[in-house]
View 1 (cartoon, helix red, strand yellow):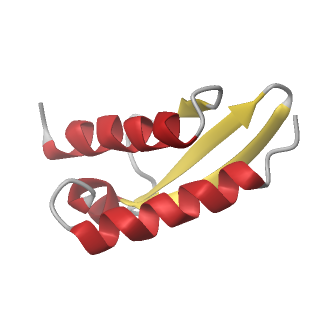
View 2 (tube, helix red, strand yellow):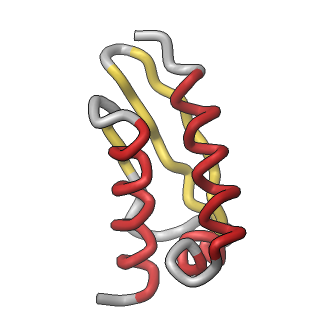
Length: 81
């Protein structure tokens, strides 16, 4: 598994740990080194951008992991089903 695929999988696991009811859609490739990730719950949907570097570093760097997790929590809290 590539570093990007591993990072995507870890991102999905982080979302599911916060709220298992949230659906995650991550594009197969980044655009301008950014992934535009869709988080949805019921009919509500929010988008968040995460850099390729952050996706790769989720597993390697605790600071990046915590920052991305905080952004996930914030985005999920904004979902109004």
